[in-house]
Structure formats: structure tokens, C-alpha cells
Image (cartoon, rainbow, N blue to C red):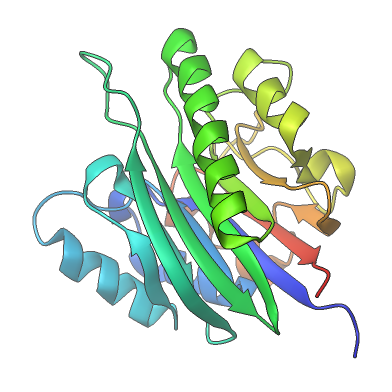
Length: 236
């Protein structure tokens, strides 16, 4: 039997404020096993909106709560084993930040998929990365599985927070670029502020913004970010 592959998508969906049909087409077109979302709806009917979006994408909600607007969705090949949700230290006057974790099994291998959305401000962004690394190390020990962290980092490679993550994980796009790297804005992508970071024992087959025209045609209608997609190989 060959080495199992897992398809992971990270996407900032701007609270479903744009063309949700276009957004759903993008997600379905990527055929992901796990989808890590940022800026998921947090206000009126937030549970209903989240579940309806997952259902229309042919996915289920694997992890997520209202605060911090994060979620992990699972595709039909993924079996969800555990879920966690952590709020990071509150910073007065700024949005609450957090970490959504789903432990899933895909093709007989276990994976910890995590989603986060870091702050626009430098100091709390850097401090929250330290908290994320501690939480993910604990999850790694608890569930005995490799970690894939995804998210809107609000910073590019070369920044303190990004480079701290890249020092503990593989920056998947830097390791195996596939397609465009820039994710923001969707209309004029000039910055790579969204990323997928994988443990060293995960093989990154390819990572980047999907270039398939059947998917990319909807990017500017779907939300203000472009998605990041990674195909990963995991040892059994």
C-alpha cells in the first residue's frame, strides 16, 4: 500500500460576507480532506451559517466555537477523533485570537489539523505564536500525531512571528511551491500572509494557491483572501 496523502485547505472566508456560492465552488473544487477556516461567522445565527456552509461544501464541522471565528471542517475521507479549542491571551482593544484543533484519521494515518488567525499588531502576534507552539506541542504528545498548522498570519516571511513558526515547522510553500504564493488581496495578490506549516516528518508534495481556472475564476467573488492548498504525505 502506498504512502497516504492528505489534502489540506486553509481559507479566510471573511464571515461569508461575499458571494457564498462562489466560495463554496472554490472549496468543493479543491476536494480537500480537511479545511481550516478563519473569519468564520460569529454573530447572528452563527451555528446555522457554519453548518450550512459545511454541508454545501460536502463537509462536516470537525472543530470550532464562536469566539475568534475559527473552524476546521472534515471531508468524507476524514474521521474526526478529537477536537480542541483554545483562546489565546486577551489583548485589550484587539480582536480575541484562538486556535482550533481537529485530530483526524485519513487513509489510516492520524493528523492534527489546526487553524489560527493572528493579530495585525506586531507585539501580540509574536506573543501568541509562543502560546500556539506550546499548545501544539502538548497536542502532539497527547495524540501522538504530526501537526499541520494553518492560518492567516497577518505577516509575511521575514517577520518575527512567521519566522518563529517556520523555525518549528516546515513552511509548506517554501518547501514545495505549487502555483502562486501570494494570498492577499484576492483581487491583487501581492502578499503571502496566509500559510500552511507542517511538522518535519510530514512530506510536503506541493503547496500554494490553486491555479486551476475552474477554481481560480471565483477567487475575487468568494472573499478577500486567496486559499492555500497543500498535498501532504504521512507515514503510517
